[in-house]
Length: 213
Image (cartoon, rainbow, N blue to C red; front, side, top):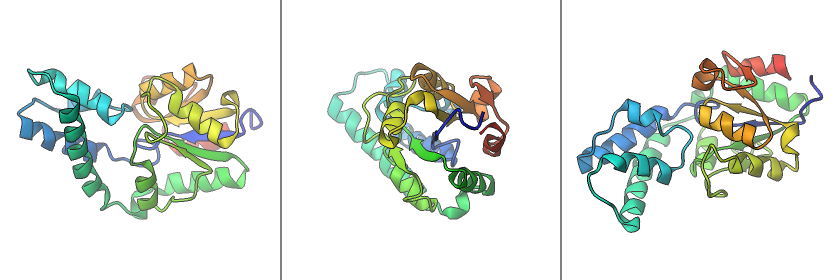
């Protein structure tokens, strides 16, 4: 089993860190300003999606159409609020299990990458003390399509110089698991995706990777 993969790809939010609450608070402030209904049920629909795709879902309840310029302004407003929340993050927000797992995988010789639809991925990794740790980072600045399209994970594998079938993805969202499968990858799931048995392996924690690999 250990020789089946040469690379491990990680989704960011919900796997390496947890910024869902920051996303929720930022979108909530924007929607409150617009008078658009928004709650945690709607927020859950946004998991794994790009900022603009998330905004399209939110604006379904707006009662009017928005121009592209208006949408870009709203997305920028949300991101400013979100980045303000992220600025408070530190290496203390990286769990011991995640840190130990990453170090163990590195020691075993695996190539490691992040595949995330977030354009803030490099900033978040820096705040967590992981800036420069990964061999490659594919994020929303490099891809145009959101999960369940496999583009971001295929880009991560490409940046590593690895074949998709030699890459195992770690993911917490069902859309992300579907994206990886579409891209020819196997998936080890945690969180909501694991509870829904969306992965080839469904784990209680990231640390269980060390039993799979």
